[in-house]
Amino acid sequence: MSFELETAAVAGENLRRVAIDPVSRVEGHGKVTILLDEHNKVHQVRLHIVEFRGFERFIQGRPYWEVPVMVQRLCGICPVSHHLAASKALDVIVGADRLTPTAEKMRRLMHYGQILQSHALHFFHLSSPDLLFGFDSEVSRRNIVGVAEKYPDIARRGILLRKYGQEVIRHTAGKRVHGTGSVPGGVNKSLTAAERAELLKDVYQMIAWSRDAVKIIKELHEQNPALYDRFGTFPSNFMGMVAPDGSLDLYHGVLRAKDAAGNILFDHVDYQTYDTLITEEVKPWSYMKFPYFTSMGPEQGWYRVGPLARVQNCDSIPTPFAEHERREFVAYAGGKPMHATLGYHWARMIEMLFAAETIKELLHDDALAGSDLVVAGERRHEGVGVIEAPRGTLFHHYQVGDDDLVTMANLIVSTTNNNQAMNSAVREVAKQYLDGKEITEGLLNHIEVAIRAYDPCLSCATHALGKMPLEVTLLDAGGRMLDRKYKS
Image (cartoon, rainbow, N blue to C red; front, side, top):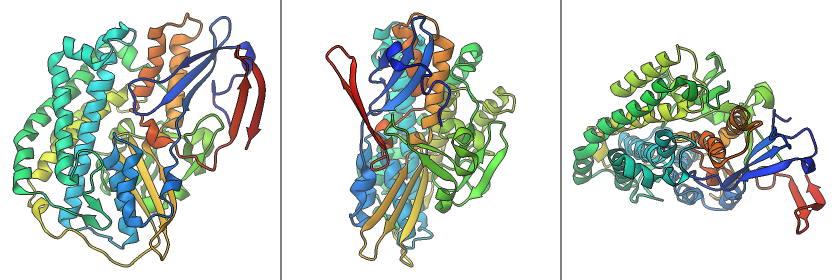
């Protein structure tokens, strides 16, 4: 099936092509193509993922205990998320149905350090130039250097918040990037007294700065609702993981989904059965898959994940400052689901505050210093691990043979879950801001602003090897098409 503006109704040869290549200030490589007629009317808009990874095949044939380390090479931005999702799947394989308190809390500390550093990186380094200067402001200022010159305190806080999150990761995983702290069935280290004291020293400052960050984005919404509430807005389903009591939990829980009106679609679903809920569609123009709820079909069943979905899917947040901000967020939207694309930034900062508060609570837990690190039980051949990564729900699914080698791997990465939503966002923005107008750099940046709001990690999300049709187009030196071959 095809959505509005996905495929032009008139022949492409009669349309002018505008490309944003590459999309800037996102992780990985992607491009946007827009087809316009002679009146600049928009006929087609696509977000293309142009790099290929294929990790699902690389993993096959490797010993299962290598996987939590290998999969981190998918990405340099969110390796902890892949490290932990793979470990959780392999917990099932080794029969570790319940981790020791030390292992459980060390993993949680590692994960919330990842959430803190990733959300800080995205908000302060990648998105704040658009939010503080304006989407069509002078392009030379729209970067972190421009923010540091105009708003030095904001830039400094962003850098130090990210640094703190990376230090949490270093002390729990062994390194800031591509650590080895989590293993099937538990962890390989606990927290020393010196490491704990070092992290406790600064955690209250991190909470204070996170509260200030929520205030910044909340005030932007309140000062300019005509922009922030309407930009790239469209209704969608939401999916995420919640704790069994319905509260926000980014490490472990059950799956919950709501429709665009906020009604429950499914709840308390064991993520081991995710493949009975979700189908992954492939399209010939992108390496990234298009997941949807199987029962609703591709047209009605696509959904959003990540901060905007999570903050609205949960019933509460179990830390006081973040829960206060969640209530303010819900009240701002009038108690109804907020579908504004820019609402992702507000929800993301609430989650950053939640992460800082959770880190503080964990650091006061003596279980982090324990020595009982690993458990095992009845050996199994299949396991699924799910975690709420900074960008959304992340699925790792493995099958392992009697020889301990991986025979099947399937990953549904956070950004993949948001694939249709990101395409819908850029099409809505194209209709709102580009249709019938002279195209300028500032207007094209509106398209990129919509994509950045999802904080996509494009290099993580390209895993369609063996499933994707192949199209080859031969052009002459003048750009005219000479031939086209298509293989399904």
